[in-house]
Amino acid sequence: MRLILMAVSLLILTPVFAQQKKLAAKPPMGWMSWNLLADNVTEQDIRSMADAMVSTGMVKAGYNYIFIDDGWQGGRDKKNNIIPDPAKFPSGIKALADYVHQRGIKLGIYSDAAPLTCAGYTASLHFEQQDAKTFASWEVDFLKYDYCGAPEDVATAKARYTTMGNALKKSGRDIVFSVCEWGPRKPWLWAAEAGGNLWRTTYDIRDKWKRKTGEEGSEGIWDIYEVNVALQDYAGPGKWNDADMLVAGLYGKKGPSSYKGGNGCTQAEYQSQFSLWAMMSSPLYASCDIRTMDEATKNILLNEEIIAINQDELGKQAERKINNEGWDILVKPLANGDYAVAVLNKADTEQTTTVNFSELGLTGKYMVKDLWQHKQVTKGKSWKGKLASHETKLFRLSAQQ
Image (cartoon, rainbow, N blue to C red; front, side, top):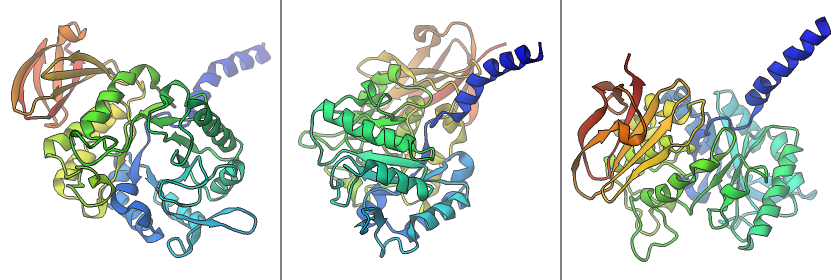
């Protein structure tokens, strides 16, 4: 009888343990180096950013990754082991990993499924197993794997990402795998099978609301949202639609984010991105200089009530329920039975609207909390309010007792 009870207990507990071990069970959060530093990233930059993540409260708020993007590589040694640039990273990546781990932060690194990266540095094609073992030996926790210099067809992309995905699984360390092929080959259909835990759905984001004619390949917040919002069926714990970096706090800074019209956004647009990315369960990667953030940027990035929507254990990406000329309204079910509702004013002018919850499939009466104002704003079956151009209101609805 004791053996039977033990066997039953193991059967009951196995799904729990499996869920606990799932990589990227929630959308990753952190700071990524590319928009601020491009390929000039250094060891000292990462150390100072890690310190700032602690001192500003970002780690406490859930930002537990720091990502070294392209430009860290120094070639290969005589045994073909990939090595960091000795001038940029004189202490090596392992020492840097130790430094950030001591501060409660995980380390992400970057490579590419071709001979060279997007910025022309050493990449991992034909060295996948060797590089995966090297990353594991450095105690890296996350790999962003780009696709510059690789063939355009889907079959090759699947094969190359599967090769690296398998190599990471055999590396001896849990390493989250980010598939960064930018969306043309629809990675949401195959990246999870290739070993990916998240996948970019569009080309790189720029510091702007929307691209204009002649700015193709340079995505604004709206352009990425329009693609990502339709992919809710492919997201869930351990597999996320990655809408790219947060641009709050960049304010049109010269660099990668300013390419083709990236001249900055309004505060309402920066807040909208954070609201919409949270609703879509996208990873949240800050990319401004967090060492010198102003209060407006802190109020966005450190909004713990909105972070809670993104990090909700249910892991459901929001569904767009209303999509008309003036408005988008999204609904995201939450683990405790509440609902998050986002209302986006798509117009270039201020607008007033009434949202009837029954039209969103939400019956009954609700207590409605505005997560930007941090207070209850109404209760009942509807909400009425005014929104600035491109503003997104984000509410948490709890059933009214």
